[in-house]
Image (tube, rainbow, N blue to C red; front, side, top):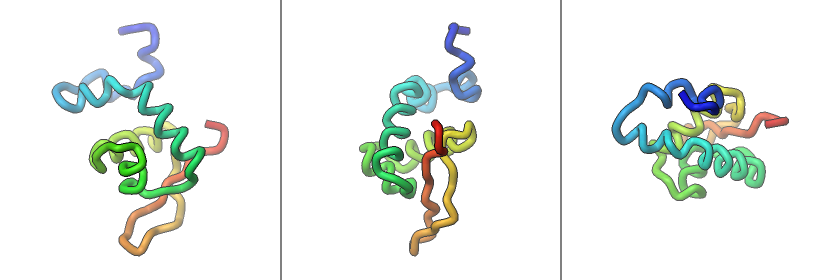
Length: 92
């Protein structure tokens, strides 16, 4: 493993194929996603996907990972379409 392996999603090391290609973008995407939430406030997965110019599936991958590791949190706010809004965890 490389020196920075402890900073990666553990799941990133074991995946293959298309998801592996997505996982290689982890450091770049972390900055983009967190900067988006810092500047734009709480938003849904489709809103974040649109702002980032990626598919909702890819946005889900990143946002759920960042939620799992404490960078994002789900708010109690739900849109009329049934989407939760996600927000950055203070101090991240």
